[in-house]
Image 1 (cartoon, helix red, strand yellow):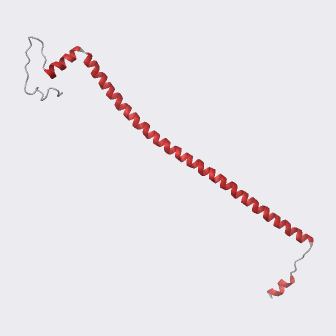
Image 2 (cartoon, helix red, strand yellow):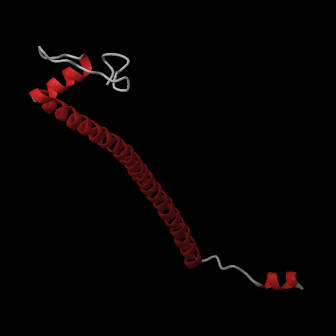
Length: 131
């Protein structure tokens, strides 16, 4: 029964049908060209997106590394400034004649002429250079 119905349909083969077939073929070619062009444009766009994403990630990694270095350097600077303050305090003390005299008397047991030094066992250091 299906074969009888298909035999009843005949395709016209005139110029209009041929022209419409050619237009349909041209439209398919144009559609394929547009699809290919769109794929190329999307590919180029995706490449740029990947490139810029890589640059952003790389820049953030460099920034984090630099911030770690800055933090380390700030802590070193803080340590150095406290050490410098301590040394400046020692220099000021060493410029004071009374302090120098006290250090010389305590560490090296120097005396003025006519003085007598009494030492107690608990006050005696083991070595002259001990503090």
